[in-house]
Image 1 (spheres, rainbow, N blue to C red):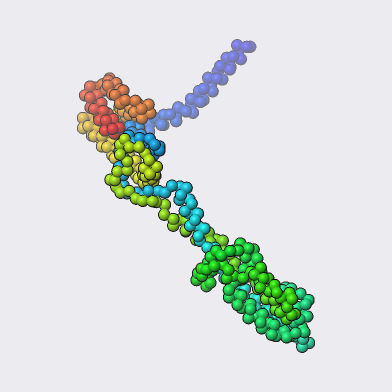
Image 2 (image 1 turned 30 degrees about the vertical axis):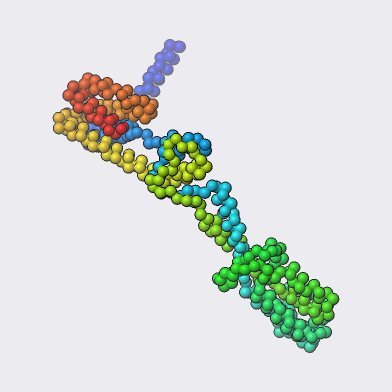
Length: 411
């Protein structure tokens, strides 16, 4: 019974393997039949494959390296400027000059015409309301309590004294203040001093001292004596202070933009070196002045190399690729002329292509991967292999083309 079970399991295992084989064998057969069904396409694929394997022979491009210089050391070689360049300022000095330039830009203030219109309209509504109360009439446009809040003494003075004269004087004073410019209390404290300011009025810049602008503190100082003045003067002072709405505001974005422009306008250089000019001679000590010029030269070399180095790499690769294509084309023409059997026999063509591509990869590994001497490339082994696979004549030609390919393409 046990033997029967083992036999069944063994039979089942062979059946499973047979089932798997029946799945992959047709696929392998179809893949193996592709070169015979598409011979031209296969030959092109082999040629392109050999060409790209030849890319491994291209020498590794060294990235740009900035030369390092130290103060007080002796320069072993003479450094000559390869192009015109500007001598950069010391970063700390440049930063100080930029900060000074930014601080010299006055803050930008914006004038708002609509504020004066609204404030004088509110004052006029109050005047009409006071006159209506005095004449026991209801005004067409009553005064809104949200405009300002006046003290009881001021209301009494406006109802009992010559209100029209008070309103007339208040309007004249407000028009004068609005023309000068009224700022809020916080902005007034920030502008405390004689620093200049830029006022934008209708797209035109006015630059002058900021003491032209009025704020709550200045108004209180101006009317400080009104505390002991007659009631008419007290009412006038309160009206002016209440309706002196700020019509000048600070524009931080415009100020920062102008300061950024001033910062960018600071000259970053302290001189210029012309192409071919000696920067430092051999065996000369590097002084602070020489170090600044040398560092500036390396800075501009790196800037120029950042957009020129890639182009040089592409041009070098394109030139080597063209040379490689010409060499492969020459070898292919020889095969077509003298060994057509290898070209048209798919197995021979595949074997030769794989051998050639493999030795190209091996040579690339030795030269670029391991960075060893090119004399370690086994070109003789390649010749022996081709001689064993084909004949001595093809071995001589193939090894010659491989040698020329390695020598020219890989420098």
